[in-house]
Length: 292
Image 1 (cartoon, rainbow, N blue to C red):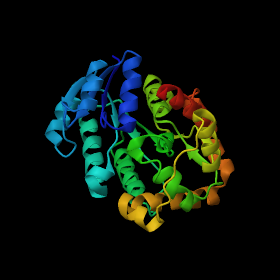
Image 2: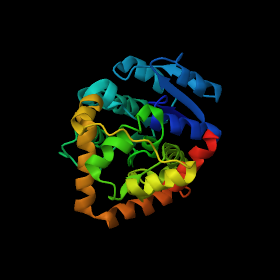
Image 3: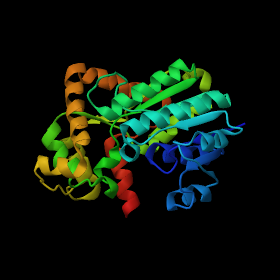
Image 4: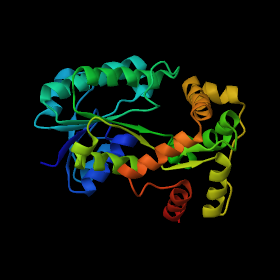
């Protein structure tokens, strides 16, 4: 009975989890509002069963859950808004409860503390509280910033990671990073060993590196410095949204308040659930090799 229902299957976390589980021979039912999309069809080509469902429609959720006892739940605040993320997260949790799910893995963010001032962190805490009130058997995964911010076009690295981010966080603050692929590996390992992971929060951090160190690794692996576009921060904020810049500021404060040692503890804990988690240099080297 190696079956799992995956929400957000065409997104980052859900997609990584789906691909890793499929590679291990699990049966994956991938939820999509548009099963004909390129990303959904790519999962189908790997063996996923596609199901059309809308996280705002309880009837379609109940149909998607039919016969499934495991679920990976993640919502996207940037498409549904913060209120929408809460509504959808609660609906999925209630549908999971009704379906008798034996293990729900929830893709969260931040440190799990309420009133962080970052709305898309705080809304996830509300969803987590709902899961607790329903007495669901769940595991929470909390990934740190994605390494993909440094190189993948969809994140506009020249403007963001190499442009605006250093203006907010500085070049020399060690920052926590995780590769999206490693999130998928961690989720698959969690589903494979429920007795070990149910009831736990899992922070995912593959490396602590400053942007200066990351830039040096990028140059070492590609032979060229990453291109940065020096936009005024106010202009970047208008383009990318205030929430992103607020999140970076929060991260800088949180690292300063907790201390780097506590973040290093998260890094060591990540090795428990994903022993082969990439560090920044290794991940950038892999990207450079794939680009050749």
